[in-house]
Image (cartoon, rainbow, N blue to C red; front, side, top):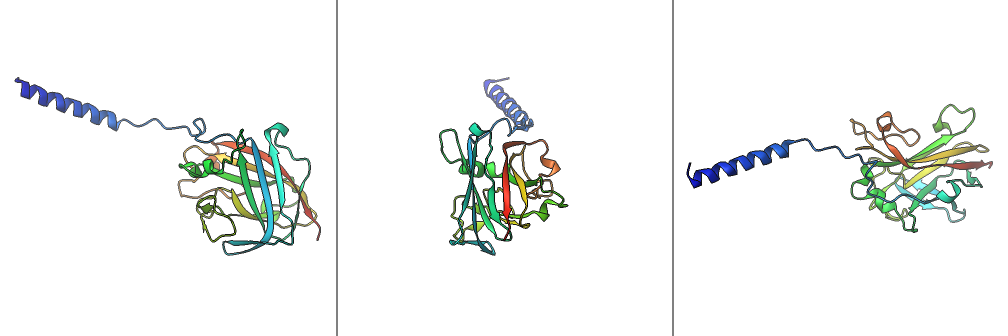
Length: 226
């Protein structure tokens, strides 16, 4: 075999090896173990009363906004309940802060992190009512871009890509004291099932059972009598 033939065979063998290596399945990435975001050290939840028409929320400036804060130093506890009124839409906005005080919301919504993160607002300790839906309604109003002010006409993606950094909540029962368990899912692979469906706000789907939670706290809620 001459030199030219030898080189041709070597190139063909190298190409074949490259093809075989390229065809090997890639190891799945466990996105709950390799995080592309910082951990939340403090959470701020603001309830702004107002009205909603379509996707546009308008604050009611005659009523005060209410802010709930909790952090790891207090084991995510809040001593005073959030006092709200029944049958008034509240714009609920969450802000996550890192250890150094920097806002983390963008880390949960960019670079593909939106496909594995979703907040849940799960009513607990609500007495004799049959369903969480007897206590509250919630609608995801996340936007593109993620940091668009809620008073603008930004594109709303919450119906297709629910994250829960922005949404509208309505409390249905005056005089009820209960809790809302706020959980931030960090899914393995995807928060959607194989039909492209995301979980409802009050119940993580069974297809997310192997995920983890980047945040898990309880907000005490007191719905005032009118």
